[in-house]
Length: 457
Ligand SMILES: *Cc1c(COP(=O)(O)O)cnc(C)c1O
Ligand code: SF4
Image 1 (cartoon, rainbow, N blue to C red):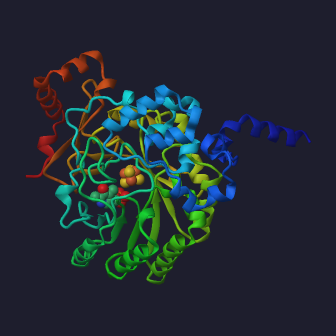
Image 2 (image 1 turned 90 degrees about the vertical axis):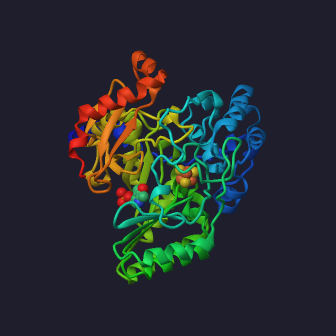
Image 3 (image 1 turned 135 degrees about the vertical axis):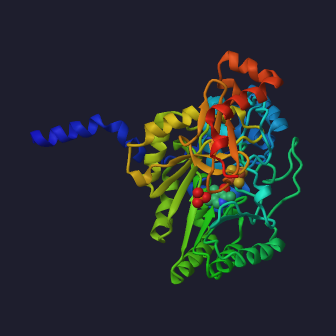
């Protein structure tokens, strides 16, 4: 008895450490006035989720009724004038937003930007910050590393993230950006497969976009089979934010899941891998629905890994990142990467300093199994590829300039990442206001890094 009590007390004392197992299972969507009568079965139906996705601010206003204050409404209208992304939000995510606290809500922040929260872009922002267009030998293929490529067969997603790194391509045009690309352009796929066929070094294809959730079952099968038939291709990853923001599809779209299952089985018969990469950002997205969806995928033998983007007010607190990591691990999702935010337009309010990323990495490591501990990476502006956040050559924290090398990917170049200016000291912010100081600060950081002597050629 005494021993049992001690154990009980020990478990009690550790309760915060068990928080990651408490998956929300209430009918939370019924708190949204427009959905108060929606049953659990309706909410579970992927067609209902798609049909009722929020695509306009007015629609949000109608569904929310008095839950939406006039102030937040007007602020969202202003946000639409600035953001490079269209709106699309699944009812699942929309209903998980805490509308009483809309301004601070991490889910609202990702999908429904407020005009008042945008900051001026950093002077070194680029629409194609990662230099993907330079590494694209044929449309829809990005070939930067020797043995792996990105294949981008579609430009649409089940939700639109206001911080998308490919905002120049993804979704429809907005008030601030014209886009030529839209939808799944099957015409160009053959050219992509031909390219892959001719490149015997390529073993690994990431099917991204856009989002693999938006491919039809026939397209999933066609792409999967076409890639797996290429002898040197060993690993195929389907990338989708879907599991995080629309778990109902995994549970009720049997045709889509059936196609994935078929491609997965085919891969196994060839001795190859088909896995899914997803994108949970913060613990608030994880509910019993996520667990049920993951159980279904896990029982099919499908490995799922997670890639999150580090964002202020979404997942930049140690306790949130630890909780996210543990909850994902518990669901059998392997936390794979946490990305330093890309330097693309309309994201300055989301970005953290590199120092914050390094400190988070330190705090998270040790909290759970090593194989469930994400690697924190910075995908270097200009196409140096992904690097561990602490592997910079030099970091001028005062001016927020880090200097990097990518010895294998681009041995003759060095790369720069810049911290968000609003997080720097008042003096540094003053220097950034003076255009003539930009190159002076950069030259000093590059000089101190000694990077030029280390480049080949
Ligand atoms: C991220 C990325 C990959 C995949 O990289 P992993 O580190 O293997 O996940 C492949 N190609 C490009 C261009 C990428 O940006
Ligand atoms: S799901 Fe991915 S590709 Fe689509 S908008 Fe979000 S970040 Fe961009």
